[in-house]
Structure formats: C-alpha cells, structure tokens
Image 1 (cartoon, rainbow, N blue to C red):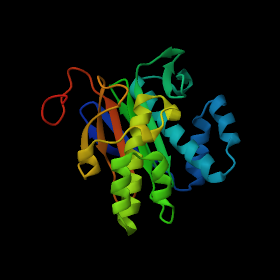
Image 2 (cartoon, rainbow, N blue to C red):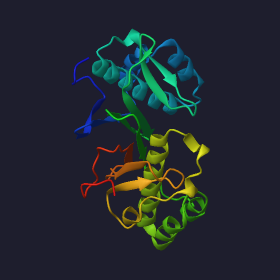
Image 3 (tube, one colour):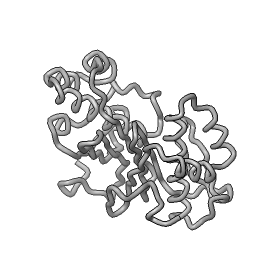
Length: 243
C-alpha cells in the first residue's frame, strides 16, 4: 500500500512517540480493502456491530493499526495477532510472542487517532464535540469539584469545549493506566493548571502518588483529543524534573 492510498497520516510526532490521524469518512473501496486485512477473530467482531457506521470505524482503524504495527515490527500481517490484559487493553504479538510495542487508539465520528510509543503505558483519546447535551448533569457524575466548577462557569460553545476537553484528558489517563472504568473518573481531577487552560502537565492518580504521568491536551478545531503516558525516573517534565 502506498502513502497515497492510505487513509491515515502522521498527525503528531515526538522523540519517543507517533500519533496518526485516521480518516473514517465513508469509502467503500477503502472499507473493502481494510476488511480483507483483518484476521478471523477481528472479522467476527466486525459482524457483531449493529450499525454500518460502527463497522466502518472499527474496520478502518483496526486495519490502519495492523499495517503500521507490521511496519514498525517488521512482520507480515499474518504473523500479527493481539492479546488482552485483565481490563481489556490490547497488546501486539508476533508469531505468538509479545512484541513490546506500546500502542493505543481512539475514534469518534469520522476521525480516529492511533498512538505508538517506546513507553509501556500510553493512552490516547479523541472526542468529536456534540452540542445539546446536559453537560452539567453528566459532569456531576464524572468530574471532580474543581472540574465541575470550571464547567459550571462556562456557557455556550465554551461549555461544550470544556466538557469534551476534560473528558478527553481523563479518558487518556484511564487508558494509559489500563484499568478501564473500574476506576471511577470522578475520583481524580486533571492538574489544576490544565483546568485553568495549560496544555500539558504532570499528573498523579490519588491512589498512585509515586507514579507520575505526562498529560497533554491535543485538541484542535475538529475534535477534542489528549494523550497520556507513564513517566520513569529518567524522564523530565517541562521544568526539568518530575515535579
């Protein structure tokens, strides 16, 4: 497959990570090509989606993940499979052996993101903003006190932006941690400077104070988005330390 034929493209690159944007607009030719790349287990899952839109998003994202993982791991598509951790987070296997490649994906509407990293724990999230919801009502069950105050103070389009910004940040953190929603999102808040508008910062879960994560707001005009990854002792935050 040539770059011209691909439905994904580099979106954000850093020293130890790459995030791709995936175009999920309807395209019968791409969808047929993507479906042929999926293995038997993935094709069975594809059949279980009730809506055509859900099948399209799954197929195009999963095939893009496969092509790029094979390229990064130097393996054939038939050699690539996936295993799943306790809470459902996938990991890549080559000929049945864990590859060690860290990845994460997210999709919403007609956009997808796929992140790759040399780190063990990576989470990415993308949310297409949808107005007309009870943002304060939903926020009361998923956000902490400072987050709820910021949401309550916003109005109109700003309220929509704040709601989805906070949600993408918290979702990326949960995905990086790898526990799924066994962790109630209202039990933690994004760093206060990020609530107030900063685009990145160091975060620590209340129950894991010794394990810092690097959190970034990647939102743009088309969607809210975020990435999170676990930091190690050799990593530095924006001020040169782990904070």
